[in-house]
Length: 267
Image 1 (cartoon, rainbow, N blue to C red):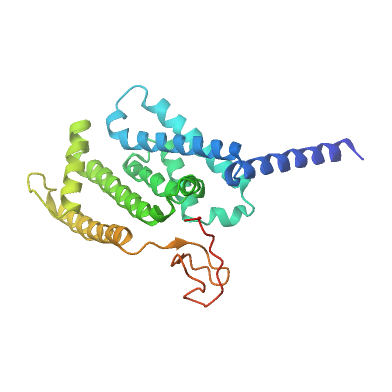
Image 2: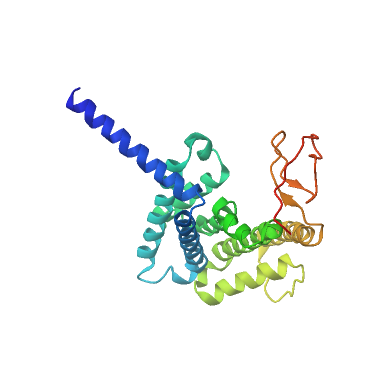
């Protein structure tokens, strides 16, 4: 066998080992995998905290260093998840991957895409779709609260996206913590439809922003109330049709009638 062929086989073997290792870390249930997933979640939360604090930090000398450090972490996570996936093309078609790529672009070009930086908080929504996050919660008996947690995260994501939008396009002239708090204050007052009136957005664009914020905000509050107060259901994908939410004592899928074998938590 030629030396070039041997080198190619060794490279393929090394890549296969790397992908298998990453697959076990990202999707495994061993103690080492859980520790890795927990560290990944903590890093994600730190990145999200940086995104929220960006309006306050963007004038600091260390901002670009923090920005590019976050970009390196997001890029490493995206590449690692691709390598750990059994189907890279399918993973890249998922909305969470699109969000991560967009966030990476805003981090790599913080000046050119400064007006879109408020969308970075969508990383919180992307994290909420991470299987590793919910595996840890389910291990602690919090599975019934998964839907309510999704609703809370969706509401928080919307609040910070709107706050970032309002700050970027209406309060940016006076950058700093005070103006960001004003933008957050306006967003919360609008979403809750209390509308104190001491902070309003000027012009037709401001009125349209308030209208859209109220409509979507009310919808998210209704969704949150439904998730909290309606009867708890279990998450168990039906092998036949894929329906995930079922009654705790369901024997057949209500959509297709397939026999279910829902695990009993031992309660």
